[in-house]
Length: 129
Image 1 (cartoon, rainbow, N blue to C red):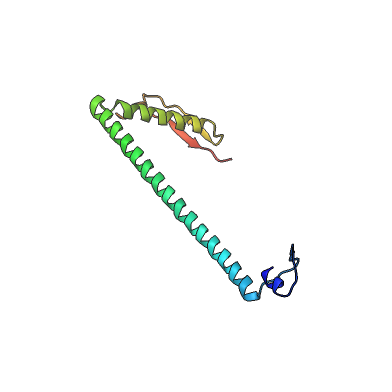
Image 2: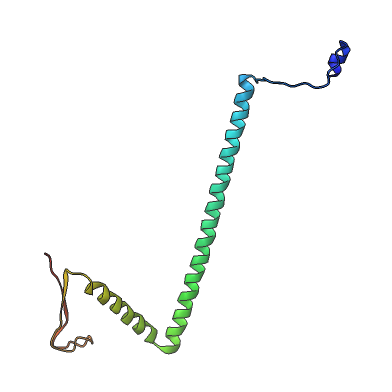
């Protein structure tokens, strides 16, 4: 506006309807945007790795505490907890196998519940059709 006043032209409002930038400037702006996006992506990858590391540390600490608690419980009350876990696992395996049509259970004639060498045993046969 000031420059137009030097030529005795009074401008009240100017509207630029079409403006283009040079190729180099446009490429520089695009390159800057690409660099910013890559930096943001790298920052995200670093943050994600840090969160995963923290989660692994917390998980390991929890497992360590659980092992300590179980160890103290076993030391205090004997191997009762281990026997309970063994029975639960055997129950789960038996339940899983009982739903499998390719497995048949054949009960034995003796007491197969202890490992003292009873006369009979229980057998699981895998039958293929």
